[in-house]
Amino acid sequence: MKKNILVNKKSKTQLTKLSELGEFEVINHITKNFKIKNKSTVHGIGDDAAILDFQNEKVLVSSDMLIEGVHFNLSYMPLKHLGYKAVVTNLSDIYSMNAVCTQITVNIAVSNRFTLESLDELYLGIHAACQKYGVDLVGGDTTSSNKGLIISITSFGSIKSKSIVKRSGAKHNDLIVVSGDIGSAYMGLQVLEREKEVFVVNPRNQPDLTQYKYLIQRQLKPEARKDIIDFFQSVDLKPTSMIDISDGLSSEIKHICNKSNVGCNIYEDKIPVSDELISSCEEFNLNSTTVALSGGEDYELLFTIDQKDFDKIKNNPDFSVIGHIISKNDGINLVTKAQQKIPIKSMGWNSF
Figure 1 (tube, rainbow, N blue to C red):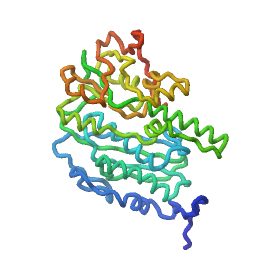
Figure 2 (figure 1 turned 60 degrees about the vertical axis):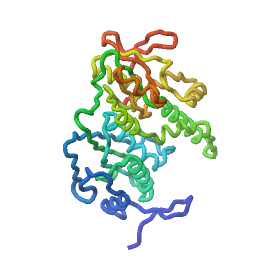
Figure 3 (figure 1 turned 90 degrees about the vertical axis):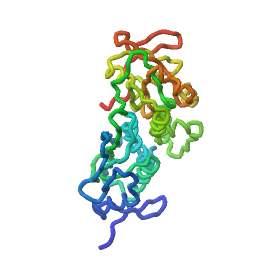
C-alpha cells in the first residue's frame, strides 16, 4: 500500500501522517529515547501501568493541562519549547512543596494537522526537560482532538513527612521571600502578542527582538527552581510555607495568607524586577509594580521563613525579602514607595 504523506513546502521534506502509524507505533516512536534514571522507577513505559517504589517516603502528585488557544499560541511558541515548558510547569508544583520530582506521565490529544515530525519536536522539548531535571517519563496516552493540541502532564515526587512544606504554615512575623525576579514572563508574552499582530498586518515583517531576549526566554522557556530546593537542603532550611508563582505574586501571597490564616505587608520597593522589565513597561506604558503583582508564569518560589533563619539566606543574591507576615485582621497589603498601605487584590491569571 502506498504510504500517505504530507510535504513541507518550505523544506520539501516528507511528513508522516499520524493515522498511518496508529497509536502504539506513535507512542513507541516518541518515547524511544527516554531512559530510566531513578531507583523509584521500577517499571516505566511498555505495560498497562508504571510501577513506582518510594519505600518510606510520602508521594506527591500534581497535574496540569495546557490547551492550544488558551494557554499557548503556536504562531510564536515553538513545539520544542512548548514540550519543555509543559514539563517545567508541573515540576514547579512539586518543588514548591520542598520535594523532588522523579516521574511524569504525558497525555496528548492532537488534531490531524499535526504530523509525526511535529510530535518529534514536542517530545524533544519534553526529553530535554526530563534530562535536565532528572525525571523519568513513565507513561501517558495519545489520542485525537478536534480542538488543536492539548497536553496534560502528571508529576510524581517523594519526600519525608517532616520535610513537606505547605501553603498553610506561615506565622506572625515570618519573613516573606521570593526567588529570582518576577513579571518578566508576562512582559515577554506582551512582546510576542504585539509582534504577532504586526505579522498579521505585514507577513513580510521580520521583527528585531534582540532587546527583549530575556523577557521572551522567560515566557517561552521558563525554568523550575529545583536549585532552590537543593539550597534549602544544603543549609538545613525548611520554609514555613511555600508556593510557586504561576498565577502572579498577588494571587500567590493571598493563597498563603488565606491558608495560613494570616495577613501580610509586601513592600513595593523590595519586589525584584529585571531592568528589561522596567524598560519594556515604559515602552508599553505599563506600571512595573502592577505587572510584577499580576503577571504569571515566572515559576519562581514564594516562601516564608522564621526570622531566626534569615542568616541562612541573607548572602544569597537569588533571594529578595519582600515583606513580612502580620495578623489576619491587619489585612493583605502592598506598602507603596510613598509608604501608603493598599489592600492587595488578586489580579493574577484566571483559567475561567
